[in-house]
Image (cartoon, rainbow, N blue to C red; front, side, top):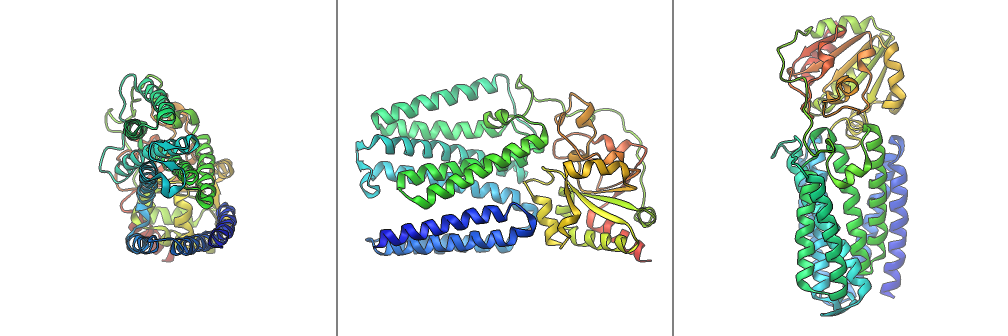
Length: 469
């Protein structure tokens, strides 16, 4: 009876998770998608509690785990800033990976509890599932820890590369496969922990060569890894919901990684092997940062307000600087004032703007920016040539023309927003420092660019005040 109830509940939860993914595919249905996901997870938790309560001794431990984990989650949800979401997501991925490692260890040392055999005599199929969950989980954990450290600025965001790096990763990958085959054949505890240690090292080596400009793809890729790790452990546990959920997360994360790689002109193979740099394994020079100082045009918020008040078409390009300054609300206020003056205002979003997929979309939605005014790169790029003003607030690498012209640049080949084609470009920035990829932005020195130096929120507020008066 309990097993039947749990299975039916897991099926309902799985359907809700699928509906959640469908809802999250578009901004207008994203709230409903989130609701479906929360309801599905609630059903899954209640079903698991019911099933554990019918067993022996499991109910109290699950309640304790829920209390501890739920308390930490609630604290983080109330304290976290929108700018810290990327590193928070990376941290969550690391927890999923470590959970897979710990469940695999529990199943290996206590197989009777999982119904997969006895110590020293575990079913071969279960050993395959266990080893895959263990390996992918360990890679996810260490890779996510490095991603978190880079996003949190605990270590340099620049690529860390050395000669022969790709060959080393390939060799470790082959060795990992050999160890998995040997482990399935023997069930050796030594091989189990060798797989774990090698996978931890491989996850570390896969992420350290990836630079700041590519971190959104890394977050998406690790999301996929965490899903496959969960699915692998779901087979070991015989848990239908974990298998379905893990597969959904793994597949959707892989598709998103592919879409983002396409948006950055990167190879999905390079993503999987680790490292977006040159084939030689030597970091590409950032370019443009070591020459003499070059002149730029600097303007005031009043200058920007005057020109935009007389403009017909304005395209706003938000970036991570907007998130840091929490300027999305005042930015929408500025856009509303410009629309009252008769201007056409739209927003241009690059696939990797910010530090994680959809970062800018979430911030603009928080400010109640109409969804129909927000456009992706392919849709908005042809319109820059017709725009009177491009208002760049905090974006840097995704607007850098060097991606088209400088073959030595770390971002060469990445599709960018064609901001430089607008008649006038206003660029809000604190100073002349390069972006997260460490590349100087050629747009700063164009004749049609005017720099507005200062905090993104304060400068935009001054533009609003000038528009009002």
